[in-house]
Length: 151
Image 1: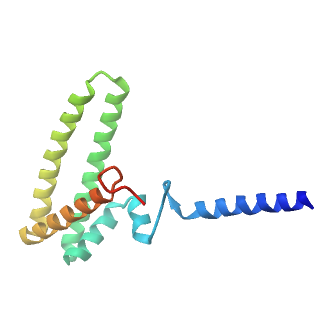
Image 2 (image 1 turned 90 degrees about the vertical axis):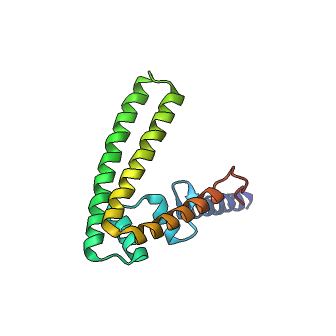
């Protein structure tokens, strides 16, 4: 009798652990569909359509924004390959490389914003920057170790 009860407890425990692991995304629980989608990464088309919905872009603007995002993704992948090669060589000082990448990233953001503004216009670009800043602030508040530990 004791063996049966012990076997039943082990089976229930293992089932509860496997069921609890089913709703995680990359090691973190997804509270809703948006969280899961954000964590898995969006394609250029997904990002363009989301921006089109938020800013009420025309079909032409949406297509141009999507093409821009595809170009940015390809450029980012190329940069990541270069960084991986540098990391493998481990020749450059880590702090110097970090500063170099920070400056490069700021230049890329400025160039990308200028191209995007040419497509969607100044008013919608200002609206987009405000939405982006709001998202960035919210994400920094939600990060653990930033004065707001996860519960």
